[in-house]
Image 1 (tube, rainbow, N blue to C red):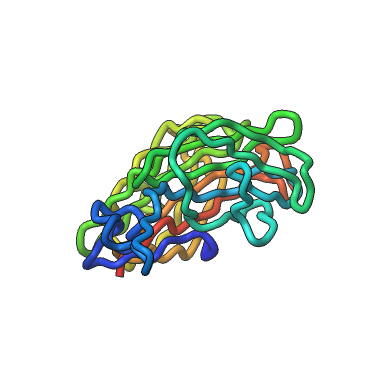
Image 2 (image 1 turned 90 degrees about the horizontal axis):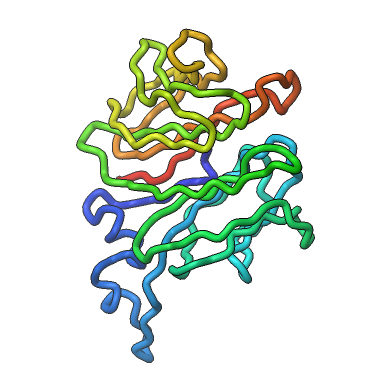
Length: 238
């Protein structure tokens, strides 16, 4: 998913490139008046609610997105002040609330916020992103189960390498490493079986990149709300 990614330098790493998260924050953000911007967290957002209209995302009182966030899409990591914040999804262009929750952000940390489930039952799923630079030649990947009725699932390559297992709705696996610069088929299977619920084919996992694969949709649906998988490039080092 090209619209959700964070560029990082291999030399400086995640902290150095973002700069806002650097331990030397006081030296890298001064302007000519010696103003220092306070430390911030970084937050990315995915709309995985299969029957939602396009939405706007607010960390109250500020809107985070420039364009409506459609189902299966999201926004890159944004700067956010730390502390308790109200994360709210609205029908785009309105103040019709879709879902909200109170989240706690810590300076210099990264987070993902997911909108999931269907009308009347929508959930805001808040996850801390423990991102580290993969070893040379490797990528990192995790699984987020954002389908409320799919049951417990595994993430497996077409060669039966298990990347994540036993993830119920709202659960997100830890990042694991996988060989980079290789094209994969990634299957989301019913837990402990060979039953494939959704697949991503011809996925090139770049060395130095960090990815999230997520499952979304409704198990019984046959239209565009049916179970599907998508992939986010959280960060990449170059």
